[in-house]
Length: 349
Image (cartoon, rainbow, N blue to C red; front, side, top):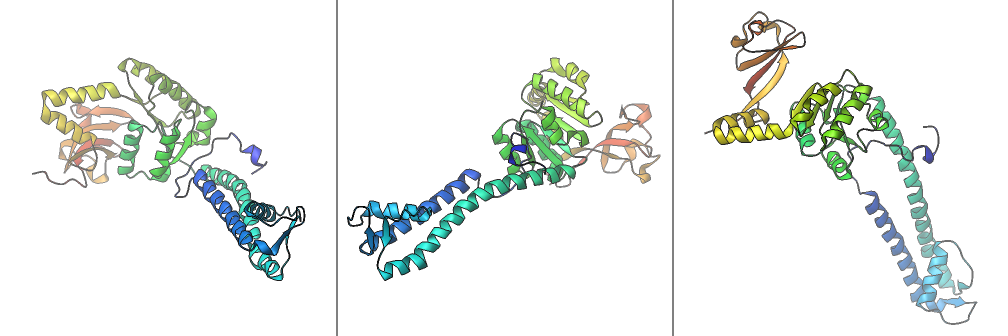
């Protein structure tokens, strides 16, 4: 990449899922290792202190002197005021102290080089990752709603590699990484951040932020960058649905109304509420699914589809419900919304 480290400073880069020590823990580990080498060298000198001479003061070598000698030796400062004078001490310096000093320098230089190399490696991985990203799903907001949406996508055979998360909360980004997802930390209304997530090449966008005003602004920004992606937005208040649709959303889900309606149905008609909750869940009992009409189903009536109940037919991008006469006969090229038994469903006693 052109430029040095300064070229990457302040640029949002993707955080890919990985299993490794955090930078803080890695730095602490190396610091403790360096202090351990210093303590070992101090101990070696102190135990053999009679073999050393302090030319500056002429006093016997004490613990502080041993620590001082270890410090200036490991850092290769070497003032020369304290020196080994006996053959055994000089031999010990050659075969033991010198390797410790070299190990310390390798640790020091290695840490510095790794920090710089990691910045470059991360920028390279970021660039390579973005070049290969196509037809993916961008999820803006990884709270409870966003996580549920991603879980549903993954149960629907969407690969984790095709999902990108954007959230302003570092904890949410860390959670996304823990779930095996690439993620960006930052403001979802930032055009630069959305461009780095390759939003212009995305196939689907899900906006599940906690505030309706942020959702509206995010929707407008997304539509400016990508007019063709299927955009679904979650809002809290029903009064904002029309504004969200005018901003460019293809689908709007009102979280407060949906939860309230489900609670009301469960209260008045427990079994009806159970069925709806079953449809909304995945992997157990019933599930709702959208698929293409097969060649074998061309010309058949919707009620003749085996093992599934057709709720609606999508023809020429127009939704036709099951009671619409135009949806009675299926045609190749149609999509159908069906209720079917979940693949992993177990019979209930």
